[in-house]
Image (cartoon, rainbow, N blue to C red; front, side, top):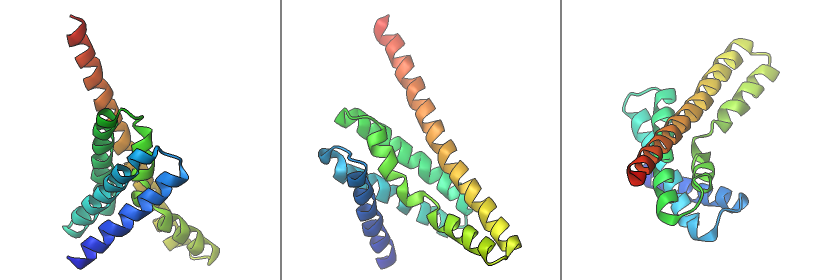
Amino acid sequence: MDNAFLSFVLSFLGTIGFAVFFNVPKNTLFFCGLSGAFGWIVYLFLNENGNGVVFSIFLSSICVGVVAEILSRIMKKPVTAFIIPSIIPLVPGSGLYLTMLLLVQKDYQKGLEKGVETFFISGAIAIGLIITSSVAKSIKTIQGRKVSR
């Protein structure tokens, strides 16, 4: 339990740090932090319960996208102000580093394996966010049609 709490706090602080770096509005910093920490905890839970890394990242990015869409509507801010910093804990930075390290050390087999895994993780993040954004736009379009009738 302590490990999950520590992960939550560190991902919360990391997300806020990147939100400050990306100049998101000050009144959204706390909510960006919560969204990023929530996404990371979802990833940890799914990954520790037997799901693969890529699938866990995919579902976590969908969760981050949904939370960002909801917060964007509530706070009347652009959704990118929430998505960009909140997805940072899920970005496979260590995978990119290890891929390059293994390739430089001429361990091409392991480097290729790590590189492919990192590529799939990046793709899972992108597809999860695209799905969330598409569904949100579809809902918005349907609601707009109902209002205009």
